[in-house]
Length: 161
Image 1 (tube, rainbow, N blue to C red):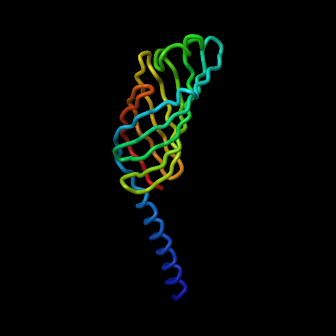
Image 2 (spheres, rainbow, N blue to C red; image 1 turned 90 degrees about the horizontal axis):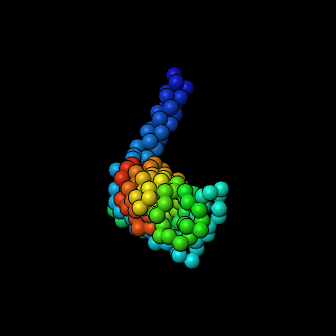
Image 3 (cartoon, rainbow, N blue to C red; image 1 turned 60 degrees about the horizontal axis):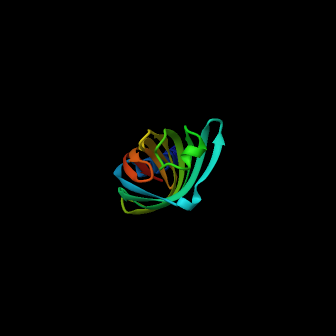
């Protein structure tokens, strides 16, 4: 009988620990704005067939549920020749992009460091349709509506790890 009680007690302790862990990972409804600043000296252009691969560095600043900054490196496949991409403002042509951001700041006031993969498409004229996926200290994703080289708004669920 003592063995049964001891086994039951151990199972109960394990289950209590698992339930506690699951409740700590509650998704947080997140929304806010961000701005993008490009380091104009960092542009590089590589021809890819009739198109152009653009790589640029910059900084992203978040406000809202996320607050903080992140250093970013963006790679875009721009659907135009590099000779035109290099002489026109960002967002002139359609592209597909991916940015890797090293975020340092807070989520609802809790300090966090996380990786953000920001990826999507840019329409001619600069409108962005994208998502941000989180890793490291955060997980989840948010939808982004924005403007190339300016910033935008985000909305979705983020979980603090």
